[in-house]
Length: 358
Image 1: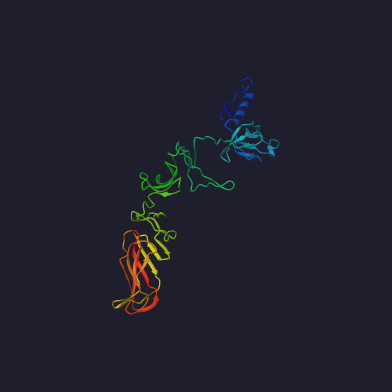
Image 2: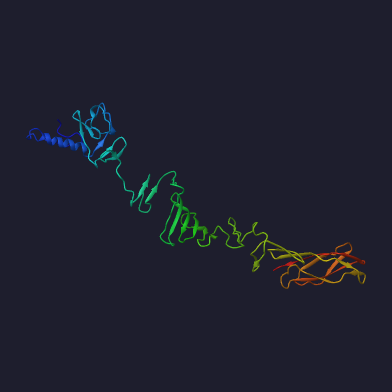
């Protein structure tokens, strides 16, 4: 017999020591088996043909050969024989085949329980630190549902704090989105990670949009900016009610309307055009060498700007007829149809007035 145990190199008591060596060496043999336990195989059933000195196996449920009848025990090859030991609950063994630690629970070898609560940090293929307590190095990260949906929640302590997603390149931030210093949702960009521009901001109370990527005023035509609905024009506000504030358009582009006195068109730049087909008149009253209808008043279908004088034009309604106007006001014009010869036919003249509504 050797003077030391084959696995832990523990000294044996020698025969000259009053025969105490026999029981003491058996204790050392058992210690050599279980201390720093490492098994060549787990749940094994067939003994290896040429085991090495000190080689240990955890026997499975239905062993054969020299292991028959030793299910669930540890088998160690010592001094050219198999020695068996029954593991106790809680014994730990390193599984050489799987490269992992296992624990005997009284009936099987299982992986030791691991606490996942209140960990100082978790690093997956990389290291975590006191700030980045969860760190993942991976081509992609998947968060999927259990049931019907899935939410990713980023919480902050108070409105003045930040809850956001930061996008980096070579560890320099170039874009950020989330709640940055308020409860409004914003998207920010940076050319260098130091200076930041708030491109878009969505007001938490109203849902309104702001930021440097959006028009700041109706006359803001900066290239690349998004048009605000109240500053720009589209199918919904090309036609409608025109309006203005201090000369700046605030309503639709074109407004159309009519009344018993004719039709009108207003444009956002302030131009107004009124048209009408007046009642039929005859030209029978002699005025010098001409013949004329009686004077009449055209009330505009909508007034022009207060105090303004629109330009008037018209067609007498027939060959040789023409229409004349007195100086108009902002709401009406006096007209008379004339002809070179007496004409009793009641022909309707057409008229047009052009001016401004503001």
